[in-house]
Amino acid sequence: MNEPKATVLIADDEARITDLINDFLIANGYNTLIAHDGETAIELYSKHNEISLIILDIMMPEMDGWQVCREIRKTSNVPIMLLTARSEEFDQLMGFESGADDYVTKPFSPAVLVKRIEALLRRSKATKTTISDKKGLVINRDAYVAYMDGSVLELTLKEFEILVYLSDNHSRVLTRDQILNAVWGYDFEGDNRTVDSHVARLRTKLGSFGNTNIKTVYGMGYKFEW
Image (cartoon, rainbow, N blue to C red):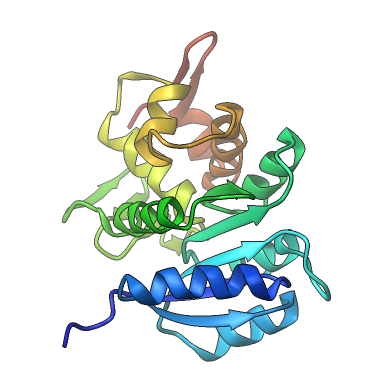
């Protein structure tokens, strides 16, 4: 018997949605955990360290998906996918501001959802086996951790991937679309302005290094300089 691919936490207050996603994930070899409100989602995540990905509905009782996402992001970079019945730009921007890695609107195809989960898990694991160490910034791609002057940087998965992509392409001007495709993938449905908000937070967390070494190239995108 093949080992399960990963464990996915599904949090949605609609049982028909959790059942649908659960059935498709199990059929594709995944383990699953189910929560029907935000507080239960956080409790389950804190108890099960094997969880590899979280699917969060935005509109849930007790705590909404945005709140749950922000709470989990305080301690973890686990990939998070948000679900919502609305497709307004505000919801998408709020989701990414909260630290989500992907965003899916209802109704959705369960088969496509599974493929997006697979892609998100691949991106979260795809890393180079090198460590960069320059000017006080250390990037350990294997461990998915970065340090600034010896202190751990509390980066989300997307912030870390942006940092790696920028540093790997240092001295090159990268457009927002290039960053979006490299970090979120070509199937991303949101606005490329989410790149700006992630880069802004990354700069803040890097302190003076971020302001000095991540350059805005107006009308084009960003450039990283060591």
